[in-house]
Amino acid sequence: MLKLKEGSVFDEKCDLLVLPCNSGGGVTQWVEDEVRENELPLPQKQIPFGRVLFLPTDARYAKADFLGYAASVNAALVESNLDAIVSILQEIIDYCKSNDCSIANLPVLGVGAGGLDPSDVLELYSRVLEREAAMFNVFIPDKEAARLFLERSADWQSLDPSQEEHPRVFISYSWKDEAVKDWVFALANKLCANGVDARLDRFHLRPGMDLPQWMTNELLKANKVLLVCDSHYAAKADMRKAGVGWETMIIQGDMMLQGERNTKYVVIAFGDFEKNTPIYMKSKLGISKQDIDKNFNRLLEQIFDIDAAPEIGQIPAWVQSKRKATKI
Image 1 (cartoon, rainbow, N blue to C red):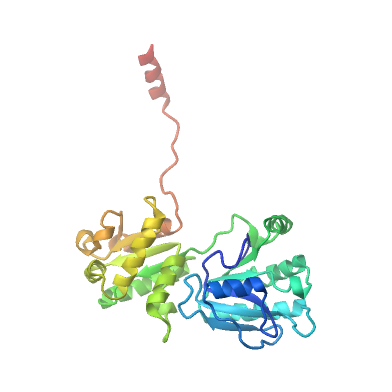
Image 2: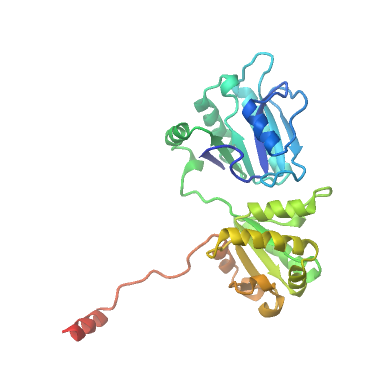
């Protein structure tokens, strides 16, 4: 999927942050300033024209797990071409698939020093990216230019406001009980089959990755967080132990920022709600595992923010007549 946005690629959280550079590894002053401010690595070497250098953010940047420097300008000729942009986009697509990146932030590559027409580049983006499962956010810094391109690109299917995005859902649970682990694994697979980008350690955590930072990034980037609460989860959360304890500290801070109307965090009670729910979540309305097993759609309603309340109909005529009579 593809979505045009006004602003900077640094404005929103993502899995892969793509930055423009030339084949010599050079970046603009603006990019360098942002990179240094966020303590991210610079290319430090030449990159073949039309290729991408991918780097991990090494837990330095909470808004993205990976960084990609796209060599969209030939440093020797100081120009770009659409073939190079196609090559870059395909490499980004392949990297997203290989590294479970569901959101990527991109600039409009090849314009500026590359000399390409932004309209041509955006049309190319549409052809290459719009049918991909991942969400590609394309940022246009100038507000007026963004408005014009959005209007001009109204025929792009991915810019149809009725198109549903896949909600990103992180599942937090304790690894202690095998029955819980098996149920969570099955739940995550069922969510994925129903249009949900379910984020689970067994899917996305790889050897060598920084566990606390991965959990932090997933919690902050999620649209919804499912807390699968059994007795082990509650004990670890209340005592701030292990990974659940780390997540609890992040969740409590995020809940304060979300405010009283926060619906991001959903408790799933695995057993007795009162005993198995952490103290800080006891005041929240939860869903039981048994209810989900009986009616999975109830959980989907929570994730997709569907209002299950029926429409309010007309007041019955006899009620209206009696009310009028009592007023006489």
